[in-house]
Image (cartoon, rainbow, N blue to C red; front, side, top):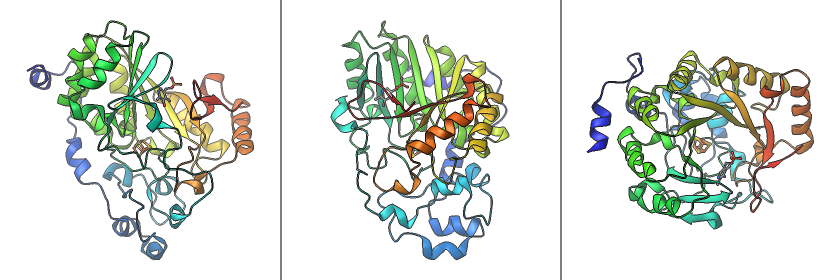
Length: 341
Ligand SMILES: *Cc1c(COP(=O)(O)O)cnc(C)c1O
Ligand code: SF4
């Protein structure tokens, strides 16, 4: 079988001996009390919500190590710690804020925009971001990989206008290399496809995922490859993350970043400027800065539009144009992400 031989071949790119990412994944913290204990924040235990609102805590060990202990306002901690405010019902905040369910074109395929189709490749993530717009998405039923990709690939074959395939999720790199490799012969049967784009938070939160098998799969794909990272704060970028970016670039991947504008995390011109500079130092260009999707349980992260625009203006005043991300909002039914300015 193709997948087995791909896994077994010698890697084309030299990679240092990395710890097994699946083992690190298993070591993730899932108990909020334990997270607080590990960060010397036990006194906050009575501020935890009684329920996780169906979206459990998950933090891999490498990300935990980047959170500053004893600081309840740490911007990395705020992205993962369940808060009482999540249980508030805020007007306008919905279960499916961006209209994913009506846009499902086939099993696990979202086709909203001209030329681009998105596969919900996997329902798993190595980290659970409290502001996630898909925190209520019915992943168990709607992932493309669940059916060996076949139904999704049939859909792509039937529409010649699709030149770019996006893998999203969940996190598509939560799939094994063997599972991803099943896509190779399937994609080869789609002559109208030019690019594969992978939207993933894994290289930033569990950089060990960028292992020899993944690099080999990417390098061998006869398509242009784009990886869109998701980093919200410069402190998320450790030397290990930088090294993972270098490995991806070495196999010809174009690296972009999307961030979400989050109150208390990165709603600050200095932080956003530093984020752009740090990304650039890793060979990653800022792509989008997203206004928060209004998903139920995330209202406490909202930054209003006037402030968001002022932040972008401030960035424009001090960074080269290519390091200023495009400030956008996803509006259900629109033909593309909507620019705010
Ligand atoms: C955001 C998104 C895309 C990608 O949009 P770009 O502007 O090309 O980055 C494609 N498909 C779906 C369903 C999306 O939500
Ligand atoms: S990694 Fe992405 S999909 Fe997963 S919880 Fe975070 S924002 Fe959502």
